[in-house]
Length: 199
Image (cartoon, rainbow, N blue to C red; front, side):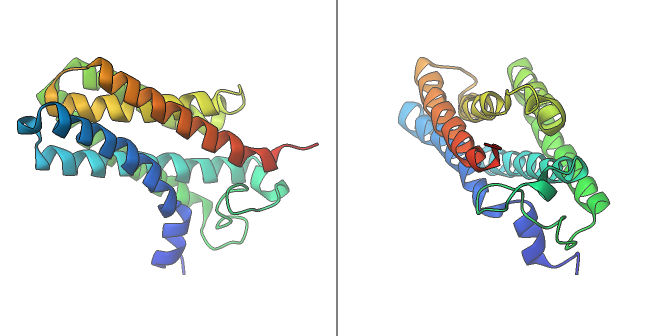
């Protein structure tokens, strides 16, 4: 049962990968508008793959830690909060979810490492921030009330990083577009967290 595709797609919150896809697409669209001759289809595909891996990682590890801490066992399940339900319902084993989260993290970091090798320290800084955010998100950042801030920052850095990979530069336009993604990502996460608040 644990290998059923639909259960794993639910565990990685497949539909929510659209948020990362939008951020990457914004960076690529800005490249096409700014310097279309710089657009690399190979880099574009690797960017989507790497970002999707990191996104899957943070969602799987979030499910794991929320289950281990008992949060998803006490929270009323909705379409947007209370986790995916896979662990509380016994559809997946916690150890399998944790290992899958780590594997997605490693794969995402390896792809990011390729960009660090070819594009330099700016991508290394973004990758370091992403890695630390994923590892600390469920265990520390949400406890400190910083979850929405870091999710927003992640969205912004995806836009800026995608643009940088294609053009090896950071422009005001990429920062502004990234800031718009910050607002959208943070507000969506904030609204979806409202049902988790105990009155």
